[in-house]
Amino acid sequence: MGFRFLALPSHRVVDHPRTQPDEDRLEPDLPPIHEAVERALAGAEFRDARARDRLRSLLQSDRPPKLGSPGVGFGPSAVFAQPPGDLPALLRLADELEGLARMEAGERALVWKCGECNARYAVPVALVRTVSILCERCGTPVELNPTRSLGEEALIDPFLGTVNQCRRELATFFREAMARGWPVLVSQGGDASARGKEPARE
Image (cartoon, rainbow, N blue to C red):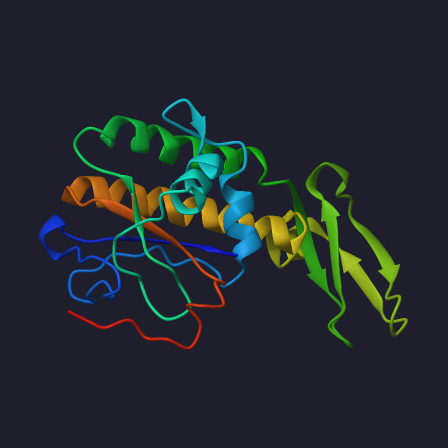
């Protein structure tokens, strides 16, 4: 079950079962992989608690959240952070998420392509030497010359790249919400009772 964040002015927040209005809504541009959002928050803290644990306690406690849903497929929302009291803690969380993204960015590599079949070759920057190899796919010589590479990229698995994208998006979103003085709401998706039902709009 994935988490969905949104922020909007306090006077526009509506109660469940209505859906939060689209006007003035602010949401992070997160990839549609809920495991990435959960992983992005792993290891980060908010108000002396793990951010992921706080989300679960807000959304899965005996007292269910009472604010409107962000949309179809998601349950009611809870307040994750409320300015001005939570502003310092949320800004620290944003800094922490960006720090985790930098720390896990991975080793850098130079990249080349075979001129015949476009097979890609990546070599860690520390190991780069000017050398010619035969393409493993088509046998064409490929010159691994640093001055003729296609550029640098991170040597990380694609999922970790998605996780780090989530971290940066959430950090930007948290800062923007606090700058506007808007509460940050969170909701959880995947509830079978919520699927296929469009809550009443305001």
